Amino acid sequence: MGMTLAEKIIASAAGVDSVRPGDIHTVELDLLMSNDGTTHLTIDMYNKLAHPHIADVDKLVWIVDHNCPSDSPKTAASQKKMRDFAKTHGITFYEGKGVCHQLMMENHVRPGQLIFGADSHTCAYGALGAFGTGVGCTDYLYAMVTGHSWVLVPESLKFNLHGRLNPGVTARDLILTIIGQIGANGANYKAMEFGGEGLATLTMSDRIAVCNLCVEAGAKTAVMEADRVALDYLTARGRTPKAVFHSDPDAVYAQTYDIDLGSIVPVVAKPHFVDQVVPATECRGIPIDEAFLGSCNNGRMEDLRAGAALLRGRKVADAVRFLVVPASGEVYRQALTEGLLKIFMEAGAIVMNPNCSVCWGSCQGVIGEGETLISTGTRNFKGRAGHPGSFVYLASAETVTASAILGEIATADRLPPVEG
Image 1 (tube, rainbow, N blue to C red):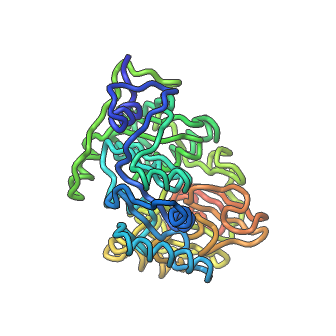
Image 2 (cartoon, helix red, strand yellow):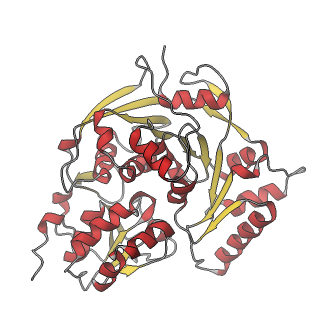
Image 3 (cartoon, helix red, strand yellow):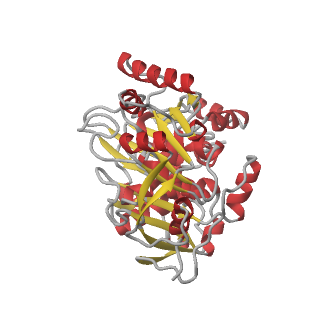
């Protein structure tokens, strides 16, 4: 019996010929990422160990991105603890450089790796054919000290993509549609594997957006085979694969889905559940107070270009705060070079430094009681972006930008022509 892509990566990390769903294996980790959300807790536990030791410091990547710059003396203290520890032990450390998953994709992830991240959206790394999964700080500490951990081999779901997305429809619409179909628990502790000829039509940015959100369906991880698109991205960044795995023809999946990309339409996930997904047309006219274009899901160049194209010659609605937050310093600089940030600022948007911003909901741009946010962030549960009495709608960069212009939830086709 053959193995799925996720099973092959686990087998490689475990040093065995084959694995099956339900098996528990000890695995060697290739990378360990942690951010300022919980790293201070990991450090506190590390310092209480009888014989503290880091197995391989070269595998650690620590990133300050959630509250950057810090929002309070308490946050400043926890980030200083992280900063000092990283310096003392020689840990690769980023601060103010961008959102953790974007930085990992730009600089570290390679096909075939098994990666733990102390953040749930670590599954984004599957866009490069890696097995990335989120863990708590206790599991992170164990892996940091020993270099190993254990994995319960998940069942895999196969999503065969066919055709191509229509103009104006995005990968963000695709993954939200899938989550709406299978539900927020539809992939609990399963690997979501994407393939089919339609995969070749998706850019790296598209693939990251798809894999990143799979945890919102409960997935343990998300994976895509490292094809020419992925390998070209890797080569352009001076990296080589650890291994390029392909699912076997006789691999067994818990369930298989066939997705016609041409049938996907712009959608919105309504408050307060990510699987409460409806066509965006059903939410047209709902007034908004704030719009957010950014996050590890939708803060890349493709998203900024799409937003700027709609804003060119237009203005943000007077009553709307439009936050534009590039996902990394690299994206920020490229957007600056292309003149996109000038377009955003001249239109009345607020351009911010690369960080998690209001997607994290505890720092920049938090919303108050009764306020409504439309966001390219990752979650929309009650209180995610501020007051528990606020409302968060999730949508694509195009829908978010169109909404910021009109002051209400809108799709791009509703925008009036640019004058002159």
